Amino acid sequence: MLNVAVKAARRAGAIINRAAFDGTALTVRSKQANDFVTQVDQAAENAIIDIVRKAYPAHAILAEESGESPSASADYRWVIDPLDGTTNFIHGFPQYCVSIAVQHRGVIAHAVIYDPGRNELFTASRGHGAFLNDRRIRVAARTELADCVIVTGIPHRGKPGQDLFLREMEAVMSVTAGVRRTGAAALDLAWVAAGRFDGFWELKLKPWDVAAGALIVTEAGGRVTDLDGGDFRIDNGETVATNSLIHESMLAVLKLGRRAGHPPAGEADSR
Image (cartoon, rainbow, N blue to C red; front, side, top):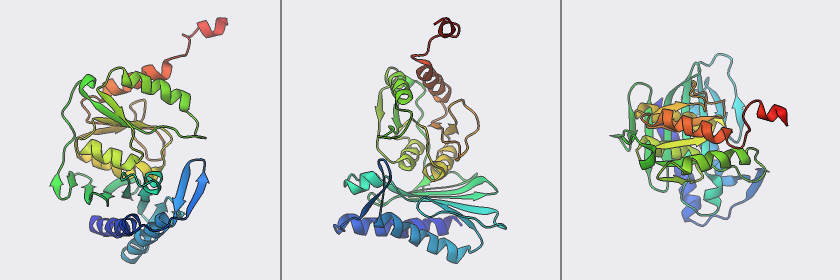
């Protein structure tokens, strides 16, 4: 099953690279404010689904562009983002990827994230570790937030939660070595797994943004939860992923940021 996911990801990556390097004219459609789709997204998704359907015709599929294709008898569901980082791709900024995860009875069992521009293939199967181009990867070993670089996603125009995010960002910036924003959540998670980043947080993400990355981080020795430290769910929208060593500190800093600007209980009532 992992081999099929790899084959599908590489096929989609070839479509993306051909469009990027051949100067293909892009037809860009806005799904909502600052959320775009191109014919390359569609072609890459069609290629992935075609490969999956030929191998596993009874499996369910959840894909970003075509939505849910349920199967009443399917214990397996493929969660597909054919091009995570479409805005980057449109602008020629080479930070985007293909993301494919396979769930078995609701649990993520296999994951592939493929960066076609760098030809970097991140893979994981539950209980078998995480790999980058067939070499085992581990999260970073830093234990102090002051030494850590954290990556996040910034709410764009029309997306709620900007004020909350800015408070979280201020809190994280004040205690870390730096904060980055690359524009591709799946690849951010893969880079946490590879030790390039020490932690990641973002809100209001979709299942296809995080399903594969969450397993890869976990199999690389990291930890993934919601903002309260609870069990991670791909449909929750809240994702905090770290090398595990800084996880509790990261959660505490984000909590402080979320509380910033709110008067203590009782004080608000007296106003």
